[in-house]
Length: 420
Image (cartoon, rainbow, N blue to C red; front, side, top):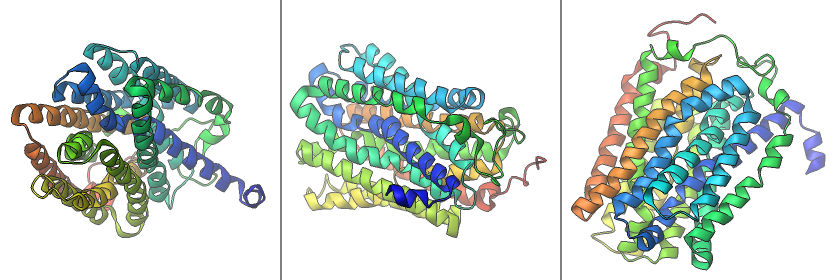
């Protein structure tokens, strides 16, 4: 392997390293957060909280991740990658270590929600999009989708590990072990040659001088465009389609007759498929266009939600794959499409902050959806209304991909053309 690597051009080696690193950060920042679905039932049983209360902790995490994303973009644009990654990893490691000793709901909001959400915002989407777009141009969607797939990879690897740790050490011990493992990543981040990496590849239109981007749109200018708000709404509605279902899925499966390991395993398989789905979506978007590929991914989400809902009427365990396969393939699949479009339209000095602001829509939508799913269960004793909201939200997103010209054609000149 080392011999093969020496034959690669230096830029290819660096670009490959960046994508791989961003994949790892996605697994740690987002994939680890999604394992909360495995912790939901043990937490509810020990703490005696209603489902809405337990789900609201994840809602606080995902909402904080979105709300802090503009700050993440600002810090990246101003202080660079080393700063945001080290602070983010430190917040996550400390946050998960502390989570194992918490006893009150407000403590979970502060530690699991705000601290971990802030850490995840610093190490996942915003810096990954900014760095990768400086090293890839023609196949940007493919490169970004591979890094995004780390979310699914993390879910696949960490959900079963979390379940095993909960069985052997309890949910408190599991969180503390995860926290220690995350803190061990700090030395790796510290020694990476960020100054060279932040400049970008020679010939790339988003290459920077001394690691700081110049020109292009500022955040204030982007806020005046229609396409920015369209993407903000897409992120919001996509979260409404996904998170109310995903956070309740493991508990729902257990309630329909699966044991805890089977339910966690199904969730992990969905995570594995999301790894493949995000990568294939990026490749397809480079070839066949954003609206068509996005539409297919939302249709898969709808099919998966219908498959999951059917288990309450036909409790046949093999039917779980009518949820796992289509839903897993569509989880996170829209992210690379929107990220690539934003990198092309808004590249320049404000890209990190602009992208971070759109992710705020994702965080707010995810928080409302995750908390709302728990509340709906407490009020109705079931999940059918949550399933319906998910399907309607997906259909709304399909319409936006086709009806907003800037998204459909990948050009911002329909609103206002910004000089290069």
